[in-house]
Image (cartoon, rainbow, N blue to C red; front, top):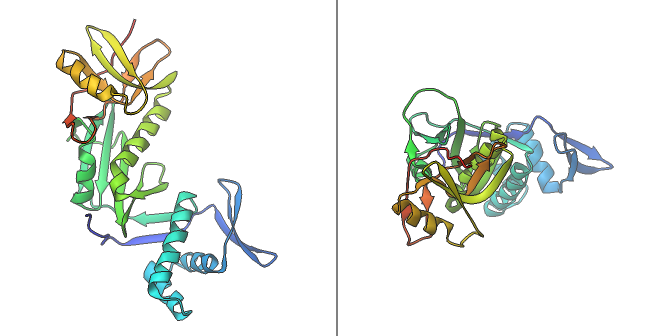
Length: 266
């Protein structure tokens, strides 16, 4: 169980999200998405309070004055916030502790994760094979914090994403993988494990749960070099580069970690 958030957090409407009344109906317009969303009376009240820099506790108190009990007020506010965060209508500002951080090398990129507390950070350290203690900010930076019983995180694009606590590691892994695929500009991204031996590359393809990770572990024991578990980036020249997260087997099968290196094919 992770500690609840003790950090100061500010929620406010995103810069490109506008509130208006159209024929007496409360609506939000997202300039980025070019979409209009209608708000019910409760949603409009919460949105306008956030636009006035009200805190969540203040909003709960104001709803109480309207005759809404605390549990219902928190539930309404939480549901509205989740929807607005998912649709990039809300900005969430917070500061993560610089002392609670971890850096790792993933392929050619440095990944830096700053978390609100050590419990959060421990959820993510096992994703990586190679830690890094060098200075510098090059790479991908991610900040993570707790909000009630869920987790918020943001990357370099400043967009806030949310997930349940138990889904934090997969969500961060998916975010980093997407960033690496987008930034690498390879000709093809293939769902496959990747290994190397004697200058040659080997790709292991198959549906999730087919046994790619188990086979990769056995091949590493047989002298192959691990290069990636889930995604292989294939260049226009035929070069293959894995995304070398720590090799993770299904529950009860253990975790195996190896150093990473680019691999090539003929």
